[in-house]
Length: 148
Image (tube, rainbow, N blue to C red; front, side):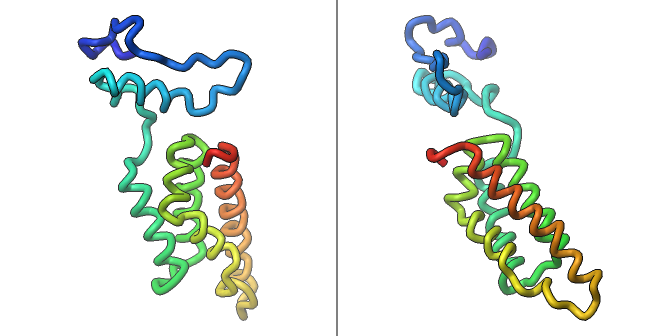
């Protein structure tokens, strides 16, 4: 897996976790931690996706959109679905979303009254995809279990 590194044949030195009869929950991150302690280049093992700072910024923008900037329902839906995809794909991203307060912003978008009771029924209808995005993203964050 890490053959590009000069320590790729470090048999017996690296403790990699192999699942035996249990789930493979967070195994990649444990392997990355073990190999990085030996000085291996672990970037090739990292999952594709946003960096930690990018997740933080997405969470900040989501919070601003629910509060002072008042983004549209479609804007909120897009941001929430992006975070939901990252959360579904990676335990690490799900944990980062919680750490940066993304989950509270999602609940804020879910409970806002701004998209309810509009004069135009079409404007009211925009809230349904937003609510669906909020609920699916929260479920994606929760799918990783109590460790998240």
